[in-house]
Image 1 (cartoon, rainbow, N blue to C red):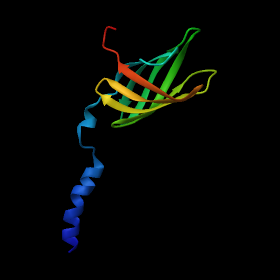
Image 2: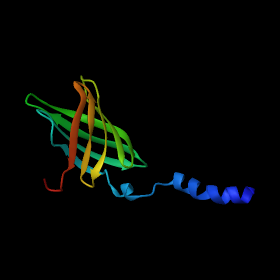
Image 3: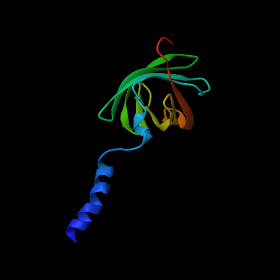
Length: 126
């Protein structure tokens, strides 16, 4: 009986240890820019190592450009990023992949209140 239970549990445990499915194919590495914020544009260059996200970027509006320091976590297909900047509260992005080149989610903090946002991958040379 114990062997039968073990045999039934092995596929469940193996499935829990690694991800399966198409969402693993999305690479978060690279340059991204916001495409639908009214007066702000966020650009960021990020990389992922062991699901930990690091990077840098900028937020630009009609008045100024501020540098961003980015950290977070990537558990496919979900992304959680903290966008830190000097003299202002951090911005949090929670979202997920729509396709290989599109992230959709919300921004909170530093004046954003569940603001819908889409980030599009920037092709090299742009």
